Amino acid sequence: MRAYVYDTARQIDLAASGNRLDSDGVKLFSTTIAKNIADRAIQVLGGYGYVGEYVVERLWRDAKLLEIGGGTLEGHQKNITRDLKTDHEAIER
Ligand SMILES: Cc1cc2nc3c(=O)[nH]c(=O)nc-3n(C[C@H](O)[C@H](O)[C@H](O)COP(=O)(O)OP(=O)(O)OC[C@H]3O[C@@H](n4cnc5c(N)ncnc54)[C@H](O)[C@@H]3O)c2cc1C
Image (cartoon, rainbow, N blue to C red; front, side, top):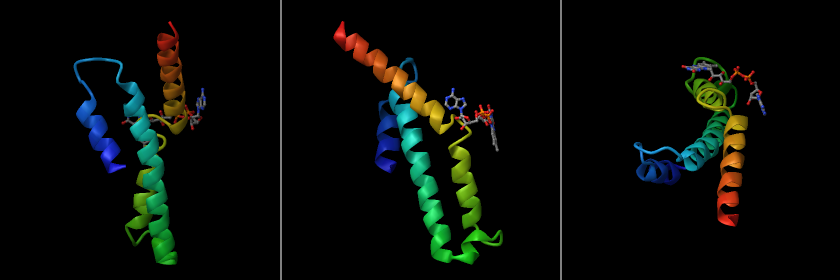
């Protein structure tokens, strides 16, 4: 996940458009992994992981927000599908 984030950030040309495939890809991949990691942290702590006195329940909610805010998972999937289709059509031509 970290390698994908860094590699995408390194390769993105801020002066150009059309970099969406990996910017959406990295968000789609990383947000689902982040939520999975936070979920496991709650599980390790059991009931203490779930209650508000400990920080991990907030980490889970923060990770869940990343699946909604800044582009939903479904939005990323739609963008990626559209961009792959456009790329494929360009190769076919
Ligand atoms: C705490 C918090 C902070 C936020 N901060 C900001 C902010 O600072 N700036 C900002 O601009 N926005 C912010 N948002 C808004 C956020 O960007 C939106 O919540 C997000 O874009 C989803 O829109 P929605 O909530 O209206 O869900 P909806 O558009 O109603 O979508 C509901 C669900 O249906 C899915 N869905 C909708 N349409 C389709 C479709 N055509 N195909 C497949 N699935 C679909 C969505 O992916 C989602 O899972 C924030 C949201 C929260 C919860």
